[in-house]
Length: 200
Image (cartoon, rainbow, N blue to C red; front, side):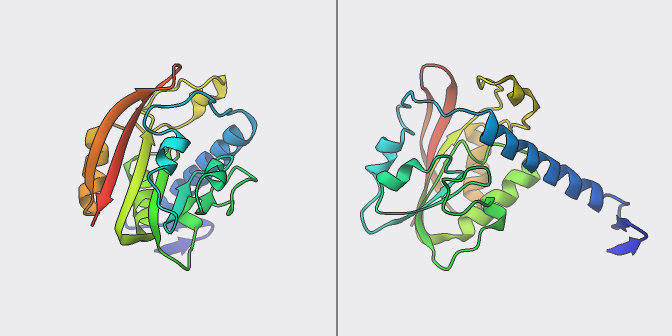
């Protein structure tokens, strides 16, 4: 990459600094939205409720909770590390891209967290999340299929990714996971997708 003045150029033109600005702008918007406008739902989901998933995690297993919000697994799981760039309750207030660990995890949860951006952004986040998992591992997913149905009108500016089970399956195959237990669930207010990844 060549630098000309204050602009960066790639082989296809002066796009790098624009792309970087867009990513940072989106993350700043998301941080503000989830810190100041988003409210967690107290209604239980059928498959992806925290208490339901916690029952599937063994006492010796380590959980990586990506986008932990208020870190609810802290009271439900013996060993958990929660990441969230917007929330003070997180163990590490960073994005998954900026997280570096000294251990590998048995389980990851992505419950409404890897829902933002385009294929490149979501793919990069999944790559980083998977890099922190053991060869034999599981991932529990709750996915927003691109619906701007949060209570706050600010959600109209959120770059939701249009998830489907098929899109998630494509990512699973890239990382040698089996995708099982595909479900559509509701908490009484919104509709979400659920699935699990297993790798052995």
